[in-house]
Amino acid sequence: MQRTLVSESTKKIGETVTLKGWVNTIRDHGKITFIDLRDRTGFIQCVGKNLEKVTTESVVEITGKVVERPEKLINPNIETGKVELQIEKLKIFSLASELPLPIDTDGYDIDENVRNKFRYLDLRRPRMNKNIRIRSKVTQFLRNYLINLDFIEIETPILTKTTPEGARDFLVPSRLQQGKFYALPQSPQQYKQLLMVAGMERYFQFARCFRDEDPRSDRAYGEFTQLDMEMSFVEQNDILDLTEKMFSKLVAEIFPEKQIQKSPWPRISHNEAVKKYGNDKPDLRKNKNDPNELAFCWIVDFPLFVEQSKDDFFHGSGTAKWAPSHHMFTSPHPDDIKHLETNPEKVRGLQHDMVLNGLEVGGGSIRISDPKIQEKIFKLIGFSEEQRDQFSHMLTAFTYGVPPHGGIAPGLDRFMMAILGEPSVREVMAYPTSSSGQTSVLDAPSVASDGQLKELGIKVK
Image 1 (cartoon, rainbow, N blue to C red):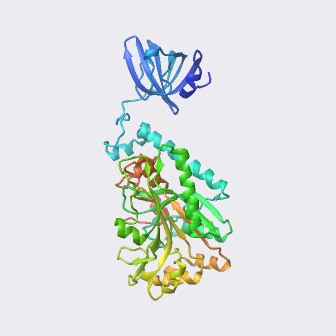
Image 2 (image 1 turned 180 degrees about the vertical axis):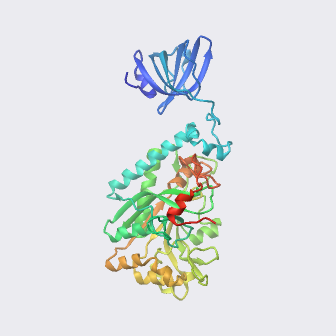
């Protein structure tokens, strides 16, 4: 018999159907047993006599007749609360052992390492299941919205070149060219700019980004996902307007219970934000205890440079005074280019950060498209000739005709964390890396075999 989904059962009163799913709960009353069956669409109560012994979370197939519940036994808390299934046949696909962690709670009080070790069980938790499904709806909305605006989705390489972009790279040794290494991309920054040179004009992708940074609640260790967008022939306001309209419509369609506090979103200079709120990602909510209040804002007019510290990954000699506050491809404000060589501290960058409820959920900029200005930036941040040569492909490409361009990359994990009110990005990711750097379920990183290392020409000290 063809499978019927739980959510379809309310339309099949009087019919015999076959349901497949997980045993959510069991209530054994002697000869009569009640089973709450769960599938991806919901729950339904099933009742039968003299059933084969089954355990919670077992995977089963139940065939029976859908009947209306008596008025006094209706459950208004579930969509199928007016019906139940009278079990005629119970088939067990897989009998579940006792679970190593409870999944009928919100899970916040359970040790993170335990949750990650058994992530495939943790994802059965209603809160987590809901988070992942909502995330899927968000990505589908964003993809369709951009495609309707004539953007094209393009995948960029995961194995790429190590360049000094602001964080530690993850390195991947090459077997075919021993002694050389690939790097996992911190972002598709250079590739997307080269796509603008290629004449693609409007690009996006849901990009995996890799950074060997210490973990925080708003960024998982190792990898994260961002909606990468790049556009040609745009000014900063074009990028802000497009992004603001897209996310405002997303909220209206997918989160109708939530209210955006102010539209258009406030645009605040970096200097004003620091002076007034003490940081560059202010939480502008009037009532921070209201989970449905969304306070978006833009932070603009960032300083192009900050004083360089010993921890910066931009410099070679360590003698340069300045480091880029965003990244080295951010265009200086046209009114401030005159200060570039004499007073760099006065130069604003055409950077923009998207802030939601006190979290930076996206950032971008208008890019440098003039090779001469790019060379000046490299010089100011103390790049050696060798470091400058690491970007020779960009400088060369720009000599063949490059349009003015810019973009933004909203962080999908952090946006989901903010809008769902979760305490960590790991609560909105299917398989996050723990704060200790271990991946979910698979216990990576792990030791490579001697044979693998020999093939790569590597010895571990």
